[in-house]
Image (tube, rainbow, N blue to C red; front, side, top):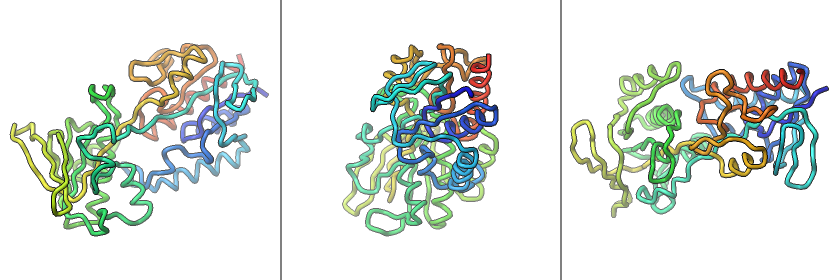
Length: 334
């Protein structure tokens, strides 16, 4: 039986392995973490349906177990080609093809020092808020309920100053989703979203954006926050400009949530160099062709699935995984 190594055990990697198994190909998932699931393990509910993330992740894991897919956890890939994978512990694995599904890295909000993440109390990222949702406890640093919450879009996206020129695609909808969740928990709170442009590209996204305004009375302000600073009463003073009116805006808030974007993994360059793969200017792995060969690399026998090649939502990653598996299965049978 032909064997395909799937590097990365997030949603795209698991879906790729499942599809390969259906095609009569033996998949092997290599995952550097101690369990499967990738970033989905830290999520609470998924937009736009508010489906619990655990439901999706649990179902995928169950299917992987039922299919008898070989999984290697806490294992890292050092170098690879289309017919061999070398692990960092020195072991070598022969294979007939490789699908790279190593995902993305979240932007480190501490780089944007003007917002005070890691410096001031009550400055959080979307990742922190998801963890709070999962723990069932959302509150200010002193344990009290927030009365005014500000979300800031595009932190680490579309920002030349930090070398992240690309759009992360899902930041806008993430900000809307979390704002709605906050409003459900704190109905009396004022919730603001500061944005450059609202990009609602997916099914149900525009409807969700409208619902956030009409049903939940969430305020959307076109303009970026320039800085945040603590006040003597334990709040945060933020400065921004409403670019629709051209007026400066000063506001005190109880919580500032930074909506961090996707960036390319730090080890993409090393992986690309080891296998002769092309890198996009953004640092993501570049497909052979954006249209007819978007899951193929420039190297025969190596394929891409999910966010390793660009920011995507979960549905897109799952669909691309099927396409990548089909392309790999076809390649090994030729």
